[in-house]
Each structure stands twice: as C-alpha cells, then as structure tokens.
Image (tube, rainbow, N blue to C red):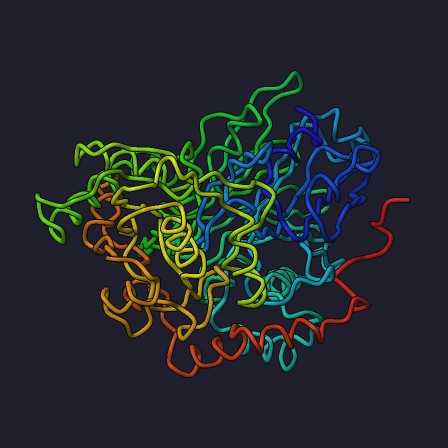
Length: 547
C-alpha cells in the first residue's frame, strides 16, 4: 500500500505531518495545516525517502454530533480511527534511499488538539537535532506540564518554543538520552531514557519516536490511559512493523497480529527489524480511558482485547435496561432513532431488546466537522442544522426515543430535539449511551470547561428542560463499565474521570482544574488562539523541508 493510500485511512484534521528517515539518517518531511488529502498531495509524497517514518494527524473530526460529537470516522474515504499516533519500520536499512511510497511503509497518526493551539508550529511530528536526531509524536496530555517546563528551563537548559505537551515529552526524552554521553546509543540507553519520562511525566500519553539511523520506538503511559499497539506484516525484504492507536489502522494497511502495549511498556524496533520489548513500570495500574469505547474508536477496532463493536452492542442493551427503569414497561415510545453515526450500533441493540421499531430519521451532511470542539457557541449552533436533516416521514405523529452516544455541551442535542419536533414528533425522549459528563477531561480530549457542560450541576430533569426534551435518560456508570469489562475481565479499573471526577494519574487538584478552565472557556480560548502568530517558529529543522 502506498503512503498516499494510507493517508486516506486518516480522519479529517486541522494539521498533519509525516517525517521519514532515509540515507545516512537524513530526514524528510511534509507538514502543514489542513486535511490529509490537502497536506499530502502525491507529488510531495513521492519525495518522502526512507524505510521508516512517523506521521501525525491532529484531527478535528468531521463525523460527529455535539453530544460528544462522537461519531466514528466513517466519513467518505476517512476510515481511520479517532485517536492515536503511529510509526513503522521496515526491514530495509536506513541507508536505503528508496522512496517510501515504494517501500509500502505508511506512517499515520491521529490526534485531537489538546494542550496548545492550532498553529502550524504545533503540527506534529516534532523534531530536535540533538542528540542523535529525534522525531516525536504523541496522543494525550500531561497534567504537570508547567512544572516540566520550569525544569526544562532551569535544570536542563532546553528552550521550549510552543505550548505543546509533545514538545515537552520530546525534550525530556532528548535530555535523558543526552545524559548517556555516547556517540552511539543502544536499546538499553533508550529504555533508561523512557523510564526517566515515566518518573516525571504525569498524565495520559501514547508516544512514538524515531531516532535517525536507529529505529522506531513506541511507549504507553504507566496507567495505559491512551491506547497504542503494534502489528507486523511480511514483505519481500522481511518483516515490517507499524505502531497505531487502533487495530483498524493496521488492518487497513495489511498488517496483522496486532498487540496492545501494556501500561508502562516500551517497544523498540531497530533498523534491522529486531524487536525489543520491556515493561518499565512494574505492577502498573492499568486504567484505560473508557471514553475510547463510547466515543473515539471505530466499531471495527479492537483495543486492549475488547471489540468496540461488541462493547457498543452491550451499551445498547444496558441502555434498554435504563429506559425500562425510568419509563416502565408501559412506555409510549413508538420508534427509536439514532443520531448518526457512533450511536447506531447501540441504538439498534436498544431497539431489539425493547422490541421497538428502529428507524434512520436523521441524514447527516458528511462535510461538516465536529461541533463540540468548534470555537464559539454561535458557530456550533449555526453548524448543527447544516449537519443534520430530519425526515418528517419518520417523526410525524410519533413518540420518538433519540439515542446518542453522549452529551457534552448539548448544542447538537438541543437542536436535534427541536428538529424532531419541527418534523412532527409528538414527544421527544433523548437517551445517552454514556453517563452524564460533569467533569473536564485532562488526558487528551479538548472538552469544554465544566460550566459549559450541559450536565454541570444539573439533574436529569433540569437537563431535559435545558435541551427541550420530554425526558432525558443517561446510562449509569456501572452499566457502562460492565459493557466494556465483560469482554476483558482482567481490566478492573478504568479512567472514567469525565463521569466521576476521579483522575487515575493523580496530580490533578482544584488549582489545576481552574487553570485548565481558564484555557478552555469559550471566550478566553478564542482570545488565546488569536494571539498565536503564524510566524511562530515550529520545531522544524528547515533542512528537512522538501525542495
């Protein structure tokens, strides 16, 4: 598969980049703002040289509703998952000067904007020339970034030029490697450097790095909050390897035998395709983000041994139990309609268990982006009606239960409810496959500040009034956890912080949450973005630029 084909496996985004490694460790890159198909045109891709590379896609997914705007990336030809980073390494030596397109080694990554801005200077992968030439991309968020920046300045004497956590992680990794004082490093040195990251970096992160002329490295935070795994495939010259956030990425590129990295584990694939793995955090507390299954991941992915599709079917059954508990067996629901696309699987199973007709009542415009991360409430509201159209023949004269995966600000939900009424629905009930979101996410999702969450300090009746629905039904947290845990009982602890306010990494206090709110609030965020200069120097060695 050519790199250009793999780029079509990536979701819509606001920035993207690829860096490859060719002859004598020379690095080549493409990086810019815009969608994958715009940033990675064929003439540029043809100039990417080498047999290994790292790519990153900072996405503002086009396939969602505000409810968490959580639709899969099933949009047109964008068939990649919602989160993650990946790099790969072929069996071809780094001294191979062949075009990477012909090496069939696609490097893709997907990332939501979290800490930092949307300026080009923060488009990943990042690069630092010393020591050894390191390329780095990551998915997640650090909760002690300010302390780490102070350490970089006062102790390591490294300049951090952007507000991106990825630059911080890169420089901490580089500083740890610098301490070896070696001309050439080995796997043991790299493991020691990553262990140093685990010792000081708190939060959720899945990372991929490339060391020029050496190989590709993947590692996962000690709690396993953000997902990452790797897979392999046979080629005429040996075995190729790919790191990715979701198994579906590897499936699409004909890689197989996908394995999830364990929490606190690092995997090194050197330029000769020799794989070395090590568990660097003994007795790590595995607490993956449960929102990956509700919101981010494609249904055909398997993450940490759990089928996202089966998980969402189970969520639908659990939601049916909540409907019966809240409305009783003598409810007056005539039809169940999903909000496209993520909620379809769960809604279908809810309808099956309740023995109620399932219908597709909303048709979605697939060229409108996710509304919950759009800047400003006015833009979000204006966009919703362009994004969905309600078919009157499915609503007129009926009591409708609308099923969605989750509800964040409620912008889309409120408009969806009104659209159903305008289409002739007698009563409109709204059911969420996830519990009420009452707390901010600190591990890599650019959610609103708490006061902008529709469920903040509200009861279900208050939320129903705010959204204009006759009734709102939320899944309970126990039911959601059971829906995931049943497919991998070895996972006994989850990061469900957006639902229960419990942050598994620690280091999250009221002061940090107040600081986060100051950055994420609608008005303040807009002003902050306006201050970002397009001339800000990114972590780019301009010798990397393609001619």
